[in-house]
Image (cartoon, rainbow, N blue to C red; front, side, top):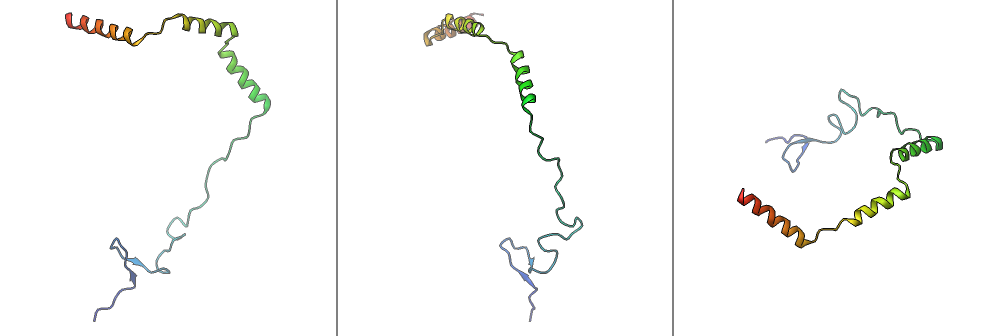
Length: 101
């Protein structure tokens, strides 16, 4: 008569010791568990003065007045947007130039 070992069958086919034997789920082994989690944590929140200084520095790098924005918009709208026919004509001219070259 063959004696069965003290294991539970798994779907994967690998034997697994019954609970209470072996290392268990937590702790054990060489490391002795998880230990603490390192890190410095969250940074301190910025003060109102620091936030104001950052905003002033940002606004100084991109000085856009109402006049500058109006001029930019006028330049953009003054250029005629290309239509599908214009783009087709440009493509046709380009392909003809490539074929003749």
